Amino acid sequence: MDTYVTAPERLGETVLTDGRTLAWAEWGPRDGVPVLLVPGAATSRLLGIGAGAAEALGVRLVCVDRPGLGASSPAPGRTFADFADDVADLARRRGLGCVPVVGNSQGAPFALACTIAGATGPAALVSAADEVAHPAFADVLPDDLRSLVERVAADRRGAEELFRGLGPEAMWSMVAGGAPESDLAVYRSPAFEAAYLAALGEGFARGGDGYARDTVLAMGRWPFDLAAVTAPVDLWYGAQDTVHSPDNGATLASRIPGAERHVVPGVGGAVLWTHAERILSVLLERAAS
Image: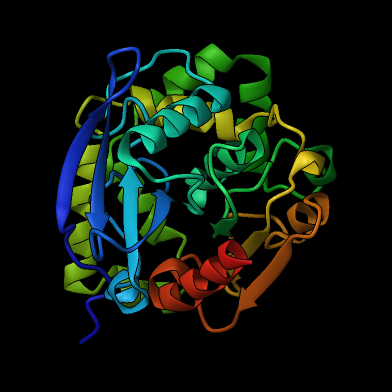
């Protein structure tokens, strides 16, 4: 039986310039090629990518908790730019350099913000949460999603309070409830389900503030210029993914200069765990070139 994920090999926390800490987990060899992982909504550093992929490619995978999630210090009112500054600080302190980055789901716009700011290098955006507030999607969003987008635009503080009320059980229900059978084969496998629930539990360990802040940022207009991207960017979507983007990243890819979009058949949002080695291999090629 495929386990899909393995437990982190190393855990730690790094003190930033302002005294806050960013918590991280690592997989793969200590002297491997560093790759940063920015995880999905409300999940913590505990949930990695496909089992064995980092080791097979000689990658030192570093997964970081965003502020207020997991073991990272809160940073009320934080922005995308603040997170990019935190990552740049972390990279300096841990000797990562201008590290290639994988952004999964709601972590994707945060990873993209880091690459635009120069804090990270080439990016792989996997099952990327799209900019659903972009005018291109005004007439195609489902009614419930459109209502949330409008609420974020009209009353960000009120929307943040709404999202703050969610917890691990509600998040797991959302993930599993909207998944195709191909994804459920991953999500319902005992080892993966246990790992995902543990990551959600740690993600909400400080309450819902971190997730709420992430969500209003991701569901609002993104305050960075996608046309300013100069590093290579690959977008990866499962063909059966109906959750993360209204058009599986076609519009998003068209807005990023030189971006390459990959649509993987036979899977949905679980593509990070079913095709991790392929995703990492392409990212390493981008970084090497």
